[in-house]
Image (cartoon, rainbow, N blue to C red; front, side, top):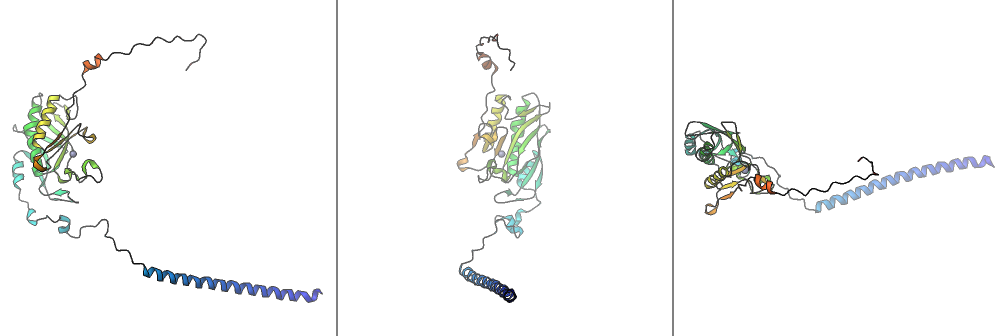
Length: 293
Ligand SMILES: [Zn+2]
């Protein structure tokens, strides 16, 4: 009966194909529909959740000069007329007046100068290298200290002071470059770091060097601590082992912070008294061993 079953089977196969296509189309339709429903629910839920409040931008640029200049800005301060401080500084130093330095934050200041050199009574110049950017009144104290305290003491050493090697001046940063610490006086042009004195005979005196005469370092420290409100050097903390920090921060009751430990150089005779180690008896080589190590 093969003649009778073949058409029947072909018809049955066709019916199966049509059914599976219909099923596939209906499934796709159902999935699409469910997607719409889910989306619809999603939209409805999202509409109920309050939108987060807009945060202010983390960094905002000043919109105007006045905003950048800060609330204490007074237009009458902007003038090419020399200030009283400029007039005093002119008598003892070579300097360039600078425009007002602005922020960020507490950084900057008005009446800033670049201090190129201190003029000695003899007419000689003591260069500051690199020339620091400082607040004028602080520059006045630095120039006076170099002229009245540092240069005469160098003179006692049989030479003349030719230059002062500086290390750090105006820089907007936290104290000791530690993030989150208080703003450094360097950010206000009210601090200067010194490294060395350069003498006319070519000597370079590193102020933190314990080989430098103790009395010379003591006299420099005492005169600096008298004139400046902060003096930090070796022994104050690990950040000031190689230079001397000076600033004129204002503290209550005129308190001065003077932390420069003038250390003694290591004495040779102390080293000579240290007993030598007892010599060990010679190790006798074993006769049987000929290994090389
Ligand atoms: Zn410093």
